Image 1 (tube, rainbow, N blue to C red):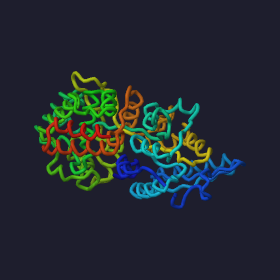
Image 2 (tube, rainbow, N blue to C red):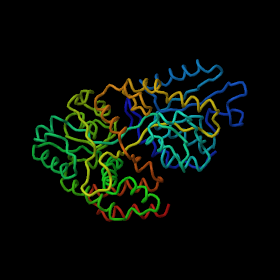
Image 3 (cartoon, helix red, strand yellow):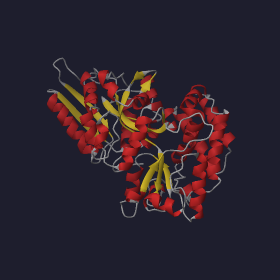
Length: 433
């Protein structure tokens, strides 16, 4: 998925095979020594990012110029790449063993692989760490050490059409799973498609199972299962059972199993054209809905946001968030100036320059005042108060486990697997990692 404004969380899946490595295409450390800095304070920083369209393309370029002006002798060489091109090129250079000095990262399992392969170096943020969202920083930690930083942190939740809710007699967004199922029934009764889903892209359905697992087992329960592979325990079977309750209501649009996410007849377009009442999606949803809608404007102020409901008896808090962000990792041969540049990009002033166009959800305290979109302000506030944060499962876990989660949940949605089989199949793969 690529949107005009937000960075695609899906891009990480194409990097799942990164591992041991080997020389940078067109890149850093031309003399092979590894450090592109010098004793006189001069340095060249190779920076790869995926913001290949405005507004962030220009925002990043201007910030690099500001840093160069303030740091004589430092040159920032920027390589902006489209998501797929970035994945392909980074795979090539990491297999060659010399990654860029700074490159886009989603943290989680892929970053862990890069750490184990010796491709990235530990990042010392110093006092700057205290000003950055701690949940966001945790995504980029491996064995307690910081190997990357977020510059944007978002979460998944329900985006809904206020007008269609009103038509169905729903006065307020549901806060419990039982209320949510009742809302789906009311929407169907009013002749409205309750939920848009891109059934041909399994990552979209995994959001439901993952959030139910968070609400039932808790973030700590997921962490314990990830450690020992015990995804076959009752809490995860229950997550599938709750999701099956929804699936059995047939809440999705006609032909959803063949639908894509980003397409003129896909999930985002269905929401953007007012043809469904809800979608469970990340913070990029409003932009993508508008981009794929017939009017290119989406549904405007009819769009609202609410958190994934609580589940009675669950161990997780309704305030626990599920999502991910976009950030940067530091290549193993990066000069010291690269660390200073990352700190500069995370300053409140720099973060405001991205937030003021609603292009990022800032992670630095104080920069949120630049956000303009009311829904994004709501999402940011929810993230800021989240006691615990769970990274997307297909990023948090080793690639084989993340893929199995997606595949098994897709089978459940297609009514080809039971909740028990979903849990057992995920556990089988997880225990072999």
